[in-house]
Image (cartoon, rainbow over all chains, first blue to last red; front, side, top):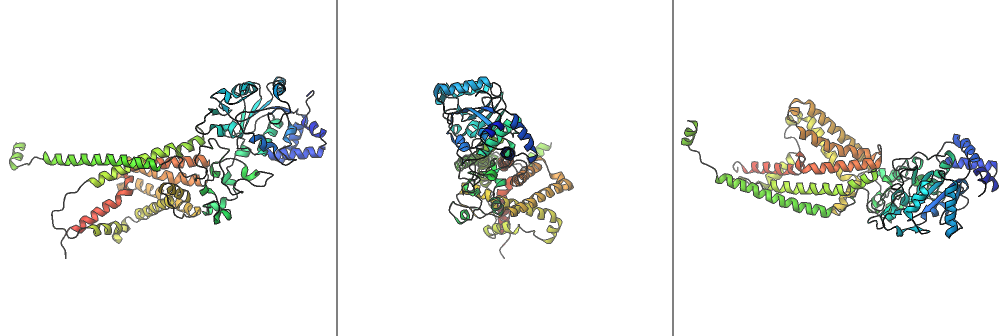
Length: 364
Length: 219
């Protein structure tokens, strides 16, 4: 990597015409949720911007996030993201291995110090450091080292953003999110299990184009993609409003495509773009395939109540609690009844009969 | 604590605590009330009084005479709208039925949500009207204390927050959490306030009716 190519040069090199490039800018604007008037600005930025160095660290993860980004039918908008960036380190995608791979990472860190983009997928174990290592370096040390020189951090997937599956009770590895460890760097979360590829691509495009992170919500997610919940954008919403629900996965309601609320859909409390961008080349999304939303892009999604129980059902067992409370209340009730009875008996026993003489004596 | 932690807390530990206090208070107070023995009736009773008790329970759903109704037409009408509305919302809104199914093990059909929405607005308006009446009517205002206004608030809040949550006002998960929290507040104060009338009204009506039926002579 002698002289860094600009994104335009890179595309040109691959045989893309100027027209293709502008089309590409249009697509980028769309996935970033920007208005068409921003296209010239994007084109200008991409023409002059050197490819951004990206170091992708994988910790306690399943590679699903990477799969989500790359395992699409070519050519895709998401695939074009690789033309925006120079992916200098990525366990799954890099050709180099062993010392050579680590050397590539160290070189990129030195060369682009303070500017490279750090992408993390997977949670970090705070228990035994040996739970997750690469090249003999623990996840925690690796994260701290690479984050120290990063310009910005993208936590990709629910594991990196909130702890995800490894964080699920009882959290045997003491898994934590990136945000809990690195607080002094600009950070954006792109949660999801896995996240939507267009969202990953959109956010990276935005950072490359504008040199800053897009607007984020209270959970540090890009508002463009996480501003609305699944329920609000769900095509089955009208059935919810009409009170038409599937009661099982194979009843008449399920066949007619009615609302899956009763079957545990977490759409009302899940913020993501699934219902609009959809999955697999816009084919469908889980609810369209007949299964309720699991809420995979929200914190604690493994511990947020049963997947197949409605949102209005308490997450803890309450029938037993009610039973104990009933027994305790009855015991106190009986005790009160006995006290009341005793009071009555004592009152009768201590009752003094007042005669006319007593009254005379008192008044005198 | 973010909104997700808050929602999970109200759906989990907080609901467990509220349920425990609610059921504990309920069984304690009901048992204590029922155990308060009455003095035996020394006179020869006209009838056993059981039928008379039940008669009074149902008869008092309606005003005894036109005059009584006319004098309190507003309170009776608004009171009925609020009470019926509250129970329809509580028992016939589908997400609520799913909760009861979890608790009791059986369920029943619900109403379409727009119908629940209209009933909710009527309930809220009735509650507001009753509050205004309470504050403006000189006698009611004189008789009302802190507890009266407090139980109004804890009754009003679940209906209001439920409506706001359903219509996705502000932020749905946060509104849902506030709705559940307001219900928990209602459950906690319920056994120790006038709200206990939900369970005691039929006991006192039955008692009054049965005592009245025992008095007098058989004709």
